[in-house]
Length: 430
Image (cartoon, rainbow, N blue to C red; front, side):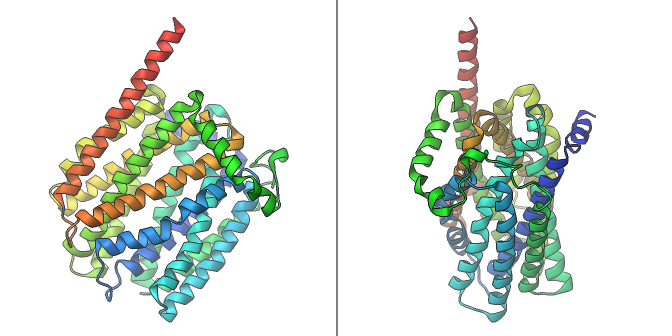
């Protein structure tokens, strides 16, 4: 099987394996930490959670990255990316431990959110750095395969981390603090794993490195303007369209996630522990979809091209999401999470590949940070819209149909761009 053969070749790259280990440990810790937050905010028996409360929590945790993200990109193009992984994970381990203490002492919610914000803020640096560093550890020929394996493996690691969090909370100890401490331990392991990589291996180039914070931030506005100009140039128009398409698909996915949380909390079970278990099962089927995307996307993107594969993913979601979502039953809902996991991750792999292949190395950190910011804004915006539309138990035909229409519009728009691109290439060749 070609995928297995390519994977074997890819894993022979020693530095790719080492970077992958950092990703797996870091994102595994993210999965643990995120489940701890979800359990504390949504599934605590003493809390009467609403869609508006979920949207507010997402806004508190994610919107500030609209400010942090651009600075992260500038620094990733100025600092050694390996050092970002080392010190970033050490810092997150320390702050996650502080979050556990806050949970145990029952502090006001705003203080808890502030602590969680600090942990996830560092995440912007680490995830953007992992994507920007990937072309440094594999050759161009296998970049699509690396984009299939690495981010998907990270997502699966986050899912496994979420599963460990469920085990700790439901079996070992009914304590969100214990789960957060498990995340802190994994962050610490991620920091140690980064030491196996040479400090200068992951870039940026030596002439771009500026270790002093004041020096690195002095030209932020100028550097960001240059990055946007770089992205919007005609030669990189495909990357800009792919980023816009993936952002809109993220909006659709965010609205459905809020609905899923409300369904698991109220509609599918009256017991909070049962609802939490059902959420864990849904995350598991979604992870299976991510894995399927990692297997299918290299072949599909190779045959169709990354842009056309994004069209197929969006169109498939437009057709299957209402068919599986409208019954509002557990079985079809689990199938829907698999389908959306496959289509969302498949489109993301293709988008990552387009961006990495069209963007120069000196701009990758900034552009992937902008990518991350767009994701956060879309996710929070989707949560806010869903909060206005969802009833208390989460059952909303309007949301399901509206999301399906959104996926259809995304597919049609990207298909039109792909058609125009092919027409232009044909014209130039003649």
